[in-house]
Length: 88
Figure (cartoon, rainbow, N blue to C red):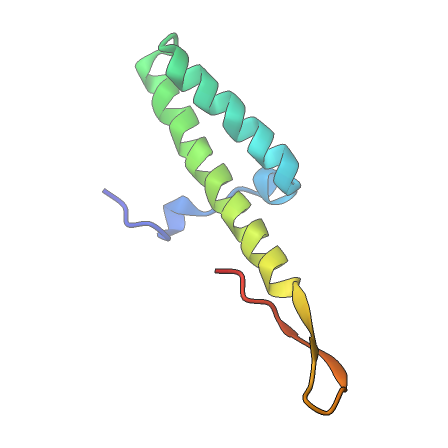
C-alpha cells in the first residue's frame, strides 16, 4: 500500500483548479454516493481515492487561509500592529 504523500497521491490539476467550496461540494457528493451503498466496488474505490484527493486539497486551502489571517495587536506603548493569529 502506498504511503500518504507518495507520488501516486498527487492531487490532479482539475482538483487544484477548484475553489475550496467547489472541492467541498464534490467531496460531499462522493460521501453521499458511498453512503448510499449503490455504487459498484471498483467505482467505490475510484471515487474514494478522488475523495481523499479532494480532502487533501480542502485541507491545503484551509491551511493557506489560516496562514493569511493576522491579528491586530496593540503594544504596551499604544502602537498598533499585526501578528499571525493563533488558529489552533
